[in-house]
Amino acid sequence: MDIAEFAIGLHFWCGDKEWRCTDIGSRVITAICISDHRADPSWLNGPPYACAEVVFDEYDQLACSQTR
Image 1 (cartoon, helix red, strand yellow):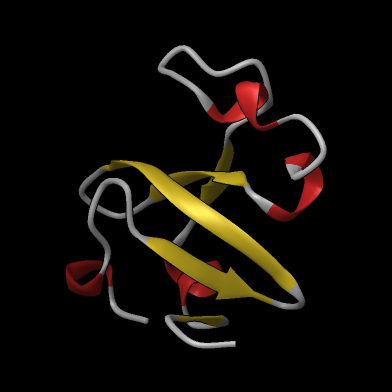
Image 2 (cartoon, helix red, strand yellow; image 1 turned 120 degrees about the vertical axis):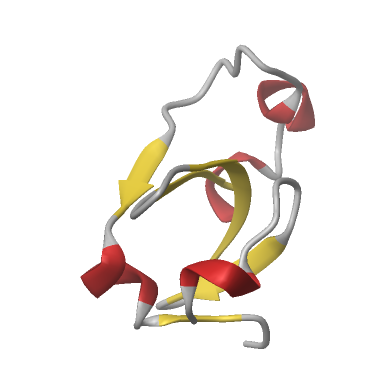
């Protein structure tokens, strides 16, 4: 995906995990992993989030897609 395709709150896939975009910078995005916290969705309420946000740089974004 190109950075222009991301939006805050957008769900996307990277590898076999589902992610939610939480912030967009000029070259990176941050996201939380939805797949890791299905048992307790309260961890996905935020910001601030109870789970770690992960930074996706322009190389990581190439491996992302909007469909599984």
